[in-house]
Length: 320
Image (cartoon, rainbow, N blue to C red):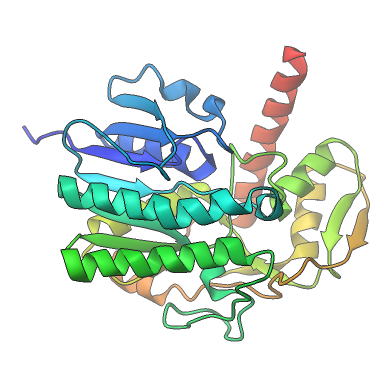
């Protein structure tokens, strides 16, 4: 009988981290879910708490990490990632990208564990190349409001590769593009949770800019499948994990209005500083190295997400 693998997921109570914990448990792993609850919600893992292989540890990864026992894999997914957080908690974002990555890499080295960094399409900034391949070095404003997240992740990639080259740590880097789905924070500040929350409340949908800027959005299950395959591959270069199908912001708003049956109107606000006009992954490397590409259409994924937000809204109302 094969030995049961044990994995650490930092940021495991968060939107993506909780889905990753769930997938690993379903694959037969024992999972240590670590989070400091700065932006995570324990309700995201409430259904996992009674699983025999699940362990929750409240800890801030910017401080020394001690996980007794062996670890086979470490998924470093801890980091606030919403634009609403960039001005609210800039220093913690920088610290988790720098100190948190340093501490989790040190743990991977000590345990002999394979390490994955959850990086981001934000390393490309407001791109001058479209779509963005992994070889593109980006167009980032290091002193802008978004710079705290962009540069934290760029540093995290640099130290990950340094630990790989200098210490021989077995590393993987996933550059995650816009992802959405159940368990996103209603106050996340990103396009889809904003639109859904406003549609359900019967409020106008706020579009930043003129709505013509494009986004490629992937459903969380597609992302987790890509991450799962990457960790099992021998691909040590950064890999874009995203959906290459583009939609304008206005088109996304229209789909959400249609699915929700809302009569809300669109209102337009100025585009935030350094907000990218286009963001679309070149996923050639993911197709060739992982045999992966997204399967869930935007309309299907948005329907599932809207249903979850509706249930969560009803639960919160019932608790009052």
